[in-house]
Image (spheres, rainbow, N blue to C red):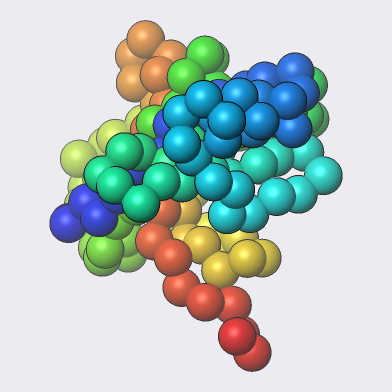
Length: 125
């Protein structure tokens, strides 16, 4: 596995207001926005930030116990196989999101969630 980037995911009350804070005060820019989230990035090596609506209803196993660290990786299928072989606590199995990301989530013994994501463009893009 080669980690190519990282994202800090924050559950917030108001993603738009939090986005303004990051863009005005910390030099981030919006790269993607939806009804219940805003994705931010910078041009340096700072981690990306995903602001997610706090009361967003997620399927079981998709809500973090406090913090979620997301790593952009290469070779996610091989990593999924390796982690399964190690009996890692995979709480969200490998799947493809509609926007083209392959991802899985692991949960540590203290409830901390680590998400591995590999971007592939969706069909037709």
